Amino acid sequence: MQSSDDKQSTPAPPGRSRRSTVSVNKRSLLRLAAVLVIALLAGLVAWFITTGNDHSSKSSDATATVVSEQGLQTLVTALGEPIFWVGPEQGVRYGFERRSGGQVYVRYLTDKMSSDTVATLTVGTYPMANAYAKTVALGKRSGWKQLATGVGGATAFTSTALPRNVYLAQPGLNYQIEIYDPTSGRAAALVQAGRALPVAQGERLGLTLDELKTRVASLGKTVYWVGPKPGVIYEYTRSPGGNVYLRYLPKGVAVGSSGAYPTVGIYPMAKATAKTRAAAGRVGSVPVKLAGAEAFYSKSKPTSVYIAFVGSDSQIEVYDPVPARALAAVKSGQVRPVG
Image (tube, rainbow, N blue to C red; front, side, top):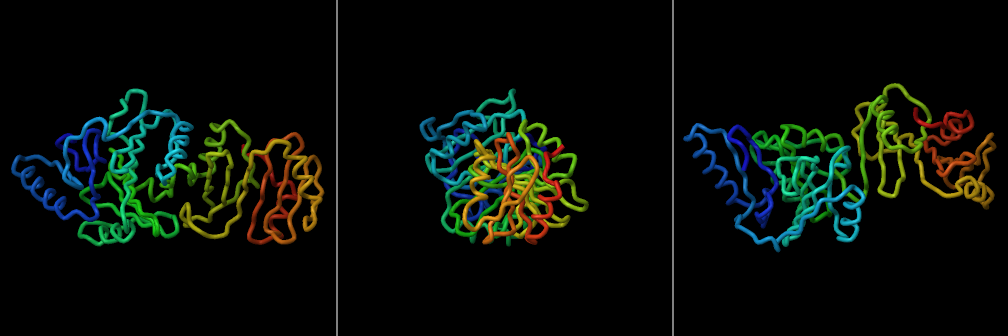
């Protein structure tokens, strides 16, 4: 329950049970109307949407814990289900709660927040048959609008009455995702920035040049690129395994969009130089002569050139949909650390 001047619906707080979602429950719409009338009569502006017949639940109905980013990855891996988030954020811990009905909540907690805090950035993942169709149907209702997600095939909607909540679904995935943030409009901004993705996929950000340099500096590891380019957004993706991808997107192309754009991939690899040299000597590979590095490309895939600098613990892939450009970038010495 929020303060009287909040127009929002928070994901179900601890001790409450969510049986269904906002997309299909007619009773929730009737309840919304009734609460609105009461609020107006009382001179209040408070909106509440419930998504099922809420009832008090015992502590055994849910399991909750607070973990680090690595701990969250471990929990999600053990669960074996697609659990969504909006990527890691600095200075937070992650509240992980799983309900008996299969609903999972990932809450972003500062040091001052307890594990059951609900007024914070929260991503809920809800099992739902035909989630995509039901979410599309939700978006067709009066007052709802669709958001550009930047992710091929995904659909997302928010409501003018609920500017703190976004509902998202993907074709073929029997889960609906709810993103909530107490700051009006921030949940929509996160979705539109392409940040909503499964925890197992890591993080994805669309960055300006200055933001990219700041992010790389905070990572504490060497990230390579082919230098700055005018008129682009830098799509930065980091997988839980440590792989980093830097994709050069023309302005106007949404983060997460499908399409072939110049990309630099950085892959942690012990003895990267020796392994790259060995790969360059295989049948079908074409070695590329460079000072202080080993490099090659495959005749069957000339759009990617692989390089490892002497003494480095990373292999770098330089991709360009135009093969000659990838090779030229490597030969001309454009591959270097971001900085």
